[in-house]
Image 1 (tube, one colour):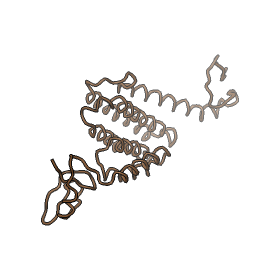
Image 2 (spheres, rainbow, N blue to C red):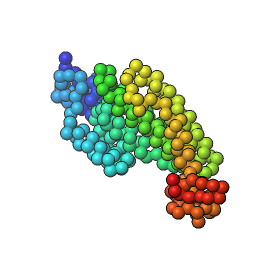
Image 3 (cartoon, rainbow, N blue to C red):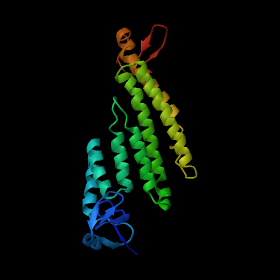
Image 4 (cartoon, rainbow, N blue to C red):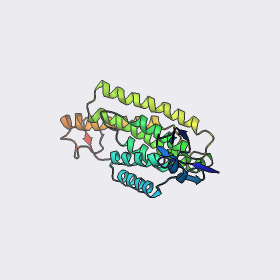
Length: 245
């Protein structure tokens, strides 16, 4: 069966409006002559495959070079051609997440993009992606927790910063519950249980506290007793402090 397919976004949802055909997905308009030329066999058609492939490569390269803003830009251009490509949506999610700063998080955007990537997969193919997908999203959740705990030390250990870290932990815990329900029935690897966020939070807080001790109390009161400030240490006695294990 022949279908009229939009050259810009690949949608087959085009409606004739007056003397033109209008894509209901991206709004692109085609004359009758253009519409005749675009009639193709199949359900999905991307007019400029070379352009799409080039944009994907640019997005991938930018992400690998830690240029998250450029990766997001190129991914958006690729998605304007093919809006349901799993790899591009995953690249965009990683790029968005990589632009979180101490002044604001973009994790909500990244998380929704991850879910869009999952939904873009055909049902029969999801089982082949579930392990890697769940592992990546789980790691992204934990990275967000670590980031905001670290901000307590890096910015200032204020009550507001501490509350932000706590709120992030609870918000992402709810997402882990959502993901456990969403992937119930799939075989999930042992290292991705969506249940280790609490341990991640405790370790991050412990590391933050140790770093704070070394850079403040340790430096001001114990630096003469520490052979290597910042190294691991322990007390052997009431007054003896050493870095030796």
